[in-house]
Length: 405
Ligand SMILES: *Cc1c(COP(=O)(O)O)cnc(C)c1O
Image (tube, rainbow, N blue to C red; front, side):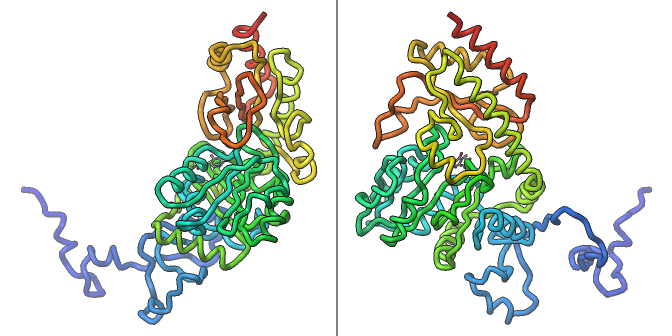
């Protein structure tokens, strides 16, 4: 005979409810006096209101009210607070990717009939997004020379609402004159939004230079582990924040507390990582500049890079990203063979993690407003946290094997 173990659970407990009810309606004990460094992971869809008056008093503009897990939990709120402080902003919103953060800037600030200016070196999916809005949503999208400086004024129309900036462009590395563009835009009542992913918010402080909106792909250095996709939008102005927040609510996007927790875990060592990437990238970029196979090194801290003077004036560091242009005597197939001959640099998009990466780009197909002056193939390196001597030996070996005389 088998014993029915469910029997005791069928008997009401002391409070009159059964076990199945009590397991749901038990208090959560957050012991007083417990302290630890990590931010607790608060997962929630439903947020419970103490009474109906509290529910009815909800005001979507009030960032200190808890409404629904999609909008904020204590974990995401802590991350937003730390990211806003890092960039010197006031408000932060989180998105499921850097591109979703970019999209939110469009949908929050632009409507049919409006005009947007995008730098010709912008992150390609941003261009794609802009072209889609132009094609399907009646928005005018125009591209400008990233080195335009205060001549941007000549491009501003009465219906221009947003000017995008990227400093530097993450493939071709031109560093725009951000303060000049931001000043002219502000004089003309146009908002500026910068994709500040390159600097991680550490090496460039957009709000000190007059920019209105800073977008980050937290997927990169803030995550640091090549294992999280997330984006942020940081602002200083309440009205701009509310327009972006409302668009975010209407689009139904949010982030998981677990992902926020991973980013919170990486933030304390981000500056140390950034500096290590920066040192190693400088070492390799400088060395590559001495190689006969390379016709230009596009690293903002080096003279060859357009906008180098802006970089020196406005930035405090560079991180692990730079590009090189190969001498035009090499065919694209030879450069491809060089890339595939690398053992430590993996072929893949994105960056910000511990591993070194490499990607070739066909730049002329990526721009429409400015001619590309180089004939040789462009290759972008992301320098990870491997020992830089091993990375240099890796590049050296593949150059010799595939591009040797
Ligand atoms: C990676 C990246 C993004 C987009 O981030 P995802 O999280 O991959 O969507 C945006 N801008 C720049 C400059 C990037 O490098």
